[in-house]
Length: 206
Image 1 (cartoon, helix red, strand yellow):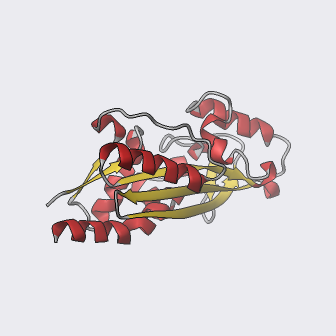
Image 2: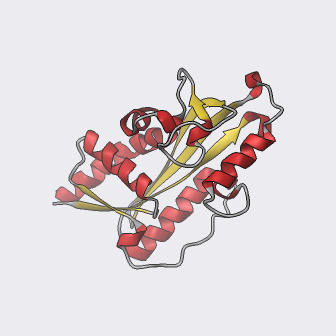
């Protein structure tokens, strides 16, 4: 029996990432749907003060509207020299939601006079799983690194081209997808949900 799981996003790259992780961990029987695969429903704005609050709210909305087990994530970049910002505002840091280039250039501009040794940052991802009438789980993944001065790489999205993970010389956007999955903030958060997804699959099979 195939378990249907809704990932509350329209981002095709996030869907691909979750599918790769599930397949690699032996959960290929899970069918991952995105928001474009289900009937539209009212989506509340992301007004939470934390990544965890936003992820849980999105997963609740999706599970309630569809009756499906739902995963939602909220992720972003936390820059030490900017007191943890853009944080939950990462996707709309430059004003318009989802303008990756403008957001990235604004961060680079804000860090223009910041010396290399003070350009530490973390990618953060909170992922929430809500199973209707059963449970809700929220987990978090962090990925430390530094912000470079010019974008490099064509993979990934968002701030990936200016983020060099600890222990690497390449940016996140220069990593192959499988490499990124194994170390990224989102990969870490989604893997933390795997035991709960495995339980869900077993419960539905039984």
